[in-house]
Length: 145
Image (cartoon, rainbow, N blue to C red; front, side, top):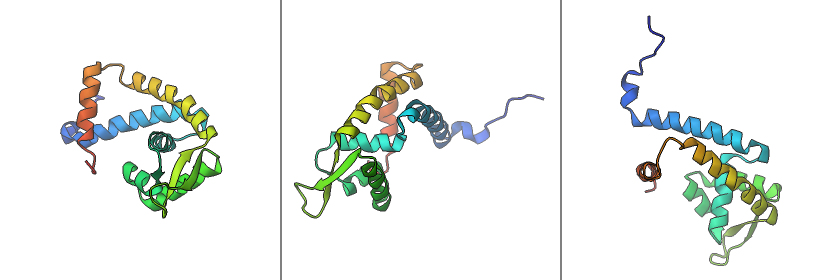
């Protein structure tokens, strides 16, 4: 009797392999940035705030594909840690714009190289062209694309 388990139909399912890859990548990223007391989701929020001036909570929630009410809690937690601040939007007086605090920028600057090293480690078996192709293919799965 073989110790190998047959994957059956799973071997041909894109979703199955995406989930397995996502699990491996997420676990490694969690371990990589755990000492910085930031989650992968919080890292993504900090990156998007840093990259988008006058970004509203609603726009950020849409960009990440999460509910606005969930985003409020995430921003509240980051604000409580003095990593993010809410300002009056320059373009929409009804909305708040998000900005990194100096502490938030320092944390992001510290974590980015670790995330880049994590990415390099996870994609070590692929060429630059293969990584570009993979990213192009994965972007086709986005619900908002």
